[in-house]
Amino acid sequence: MPVAAIPVYRYRHAPNGLATFTQLAAQGLRPVADPVAELRWRSRKARAAGGWRTALLYDRDHTRPVQPMTPGRWRSHAAMMRARRTCPTCRRDRPISPKTRGRPGNPSTVKELETTSMTQRTLLRRQTVRPLLLDLYSCAGGAGTGYHRAGFDVHGVDIVNRTNYPFHLTVADALEHLAHLISTGDIARYAFVHASPPCQDQCNLTVGTNRSRGWGGTHEDLVAPTRELLDATGLPYVIEQPNGRAQIRKDITLRGEMFRLGVIRHRNFELGGWSTDRPAHVPHRGRVSGWRHGRKHTGPYVAAYGSGGGKPTVPQLQAAMGITWTDVREELTEAIPPAYGEWLGRAYLTHAATAVAA
Image (cartoon, one colour):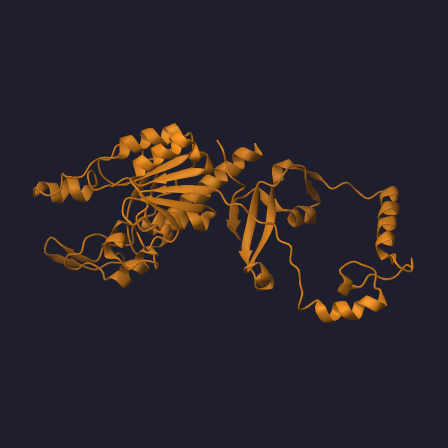
């Protein structure tokens, strides 16, 4: 299972069992294997690096106690520090000056360094390569935004030109584009695939009220052909569908209340090529606001579908879903809350990190 790079976690979101080099050293440990992830956080001290600071994360299971300093090692350490303090010009042992960043304090250069160090600072930063995710049937990018927050770079594919989509977008038929990537070998660029085939054919809204009134029935079920191509990629993937009759395994079910959102929005996910623990069910806090069968109800949730009477305004939808980059009602009512994609992305990256450590 190819992974483009080590996973990236936000501050305080790294899984248990991982630690930075400094944290390991504070516990008297040292890593004996390569880092398995990276930590990123915003910092005012790193303005020259775009405001981001980073730290490598190591698996605690692949560590050993720090070897104690022996007299011989202390002698080697003293010789090393003496060499650093020796001026290359006069060969005199001089104290190390902070302004010279570890070089001996040569009086002829210290003043010059003092005047230029604040205007010509050089910050060396390791460039992080994020895993690349293919977002099929991407719509407005709700799921893609969540995956991006989790640590992925995202490429979207949608048959409609979604001008509000926040990442690179290919306007094409998702199945044809995926088949092309497989046939050309370009699918190897990706580490993960998310697919949200159109759900109108089998969702509860269509097979229930709408179909009983003679509406609907014109949409095609694309779940099976999508799964067939995803299996052919050899990549780990997710297929998303709402509650209804769609033929997918409900490996994971996410709801808005799990993330304190203003929508209920049950979504089921089939996991291909990987697995994770199912989250605990969180009870609803009340009803969905709006009109139902001639009666008006109030509650902590909005009805994030349709545009009939009692439906929320666009700003209310944006706030309830956690989506700010689009104000198109159709895109909002069809979107997956970014919190769902972020949860799935972090779950997969944790799974990948565990597999690498093993």
